[in-house]
Image: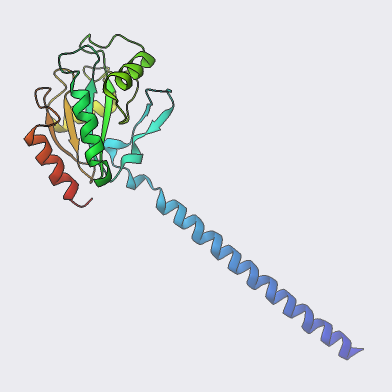
Length: 205
């Protein structure tokens, strides 16, 4: 009897040890997966200038600008009935030409200068049908004054220049720092803007 009891005891110990080992391995795997997940999306990975959410123009679904972290970002306030509205074509060409290198153009329609009276749907239809705009655009946004959204308040504070008219441009580097601002007179094909974009694309985050 004692021999049988001893054998049963040994078997139980072996089973217990195997179960504990399996549990330890599973716990470590879960811990590593959780650590990887937390490191893959960390608040520190999103610079303050992009740590904002806006509704997409086409369907008004919230979009986080953090998805553009690590890219070169050109922020533009736009309008449909402006002397500079044709810049949409150049902005789309810019986005298409350089997107694979890491550039993204972000458009923010605004009625701050009384030249964007349409609804979000009307703006979206106009941009697509008239200029074939595919770069990300967001719902109508206030970009100047006390009611300006935090993104444009930050851009104004960091450059010392608020949008003076439609199609004012702000260039943000891969590191999330504002590189420069450009007036409406600086078109998407301007040598100064293209040179700054090229330099920013070659820089490391």
